[in-house]
Amino acid sequence: MRPPILVATPGRLWELMSSKEYSHLNDLSQLRFLVIDEADRMIKQGNFPQLQQIFDVINEANPPPEDPADLEDESSDDDDDDDRLKGLTGVRGEAKLVMLDDSILDAIERERNSGGKSAGTEIPIMLDDSILDAIERERNSGGKSAGTEIPKPMEMDDDEFEQQQQQLLGGESDSESEEEVASVHRQTFVYSATLTLPPSMHDLIKKGITKRKPSKKKKNRHPTTVDGAIAEILEVAGARGETKIVNLSNMIPEGKKKAKQQDAAKKGNAKKVADESATFATRLPAGLTLGEIRCAQRHKDSHLYAYLVTTRQGSSGPCLVFCNSIAAVRRVGETLKTLGLPVKMLHAQMPQKSRMGALESLRTSNSRSIVVASDVAARGLDITSVTTVVHYDVARVVDTFIHRAGRTARGVGEKAVGTSISLVAPAEEREHQKICEAVQGKESKSLEQVNIDGRLLNEARERVALA
Image (cartoon, rainbow, N blue to C red; front, side, top):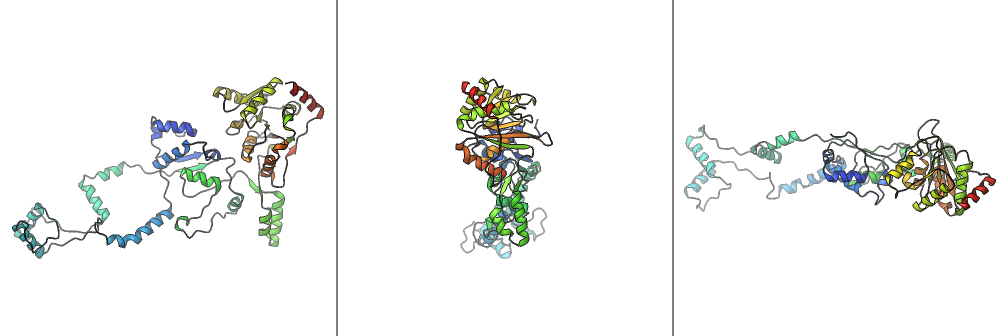
């Protein structure tokens, strides 16, 4: 049975395709939709080596439509070579045909009577015995014989010649063409929370200006409407044709600068202001609150414990704590367990059963579950009950921060609320500022400060020191 929808990871899918044991994976000529999720991670070098092999098989079974520009270039090149090809010897379809008049018939008669040894006349065509017999009967009967007709020379092009040859072979081409299945137009969809275009390109798309000046070179005569990582994944996937972008990441100018641009536009200085202040910030979900706690690296354990125990948000529901390494996950997880908190750990070196158990503990909205995880949990988890995300280690890149914070405040409506807290050490200040600029604009250097009662914090430090 051919499944209508197949969802798989690249490694497992290629394993099934290469086994040749599944008929629906052996023939992909009728594939209508190809969806690539988490595309920014897919195209990173070394992440999924089987992905290119999968794309090659799909493009071979269901080739993308040819680019009209390439076809036009090829046809123009062929037209330029027509005259040159006609002058070459040995090109099929360009041979000259000779009409059989009386002089040629007399020459044929003399050639036949002399046994092919006459030296004065050269026959310009090759004739077998059957044609010579037919010519002889035709000549003796004065052109009135009814049994055999002399084949009349005629002109034909290459297509007609091929068609005649196929008919002589029994019409195999007709039967094969009837068995061929019409090709299916395939659409390629690319999804990612952080697969964004350069800001300048976003501005062009917003204004509806997606065409650039065409290049003088034939190969680049069509304008390029996408750039960056999107163009890269489309090229790898073999996607061609019209490209449409639906941007849900809300890349918008900062509020103050947008108003300044509008005022400058009225005065005729819009271009200058746009060059100086047109920056973009990613708007995260409306129900997501971003906060930070600044502390020394050695005090992060006590600040984390105090936040989870003494604050209303930290103790109100399931919580995800992210670390940058598996070693940190194990150490922080064991520390919180010693302090009596219901903690589970989640990282890539754990067996699948243990991972699923950790995820299940987060699905009850009224539970006090805490999962300390590596970035393996930053993508693909859709658990609406998670109320808090804590970045024990500041994310190394902005994309990772967005994926981490996106594990809370999921869904739509009033219930889609959550909190993202970053524990920032002095050594992590540079990475943290980049994140602030990306999510709040270039003028922002910090997030909302989260305050913890000093007396409770001192008690938390004493407990953590004992643990």
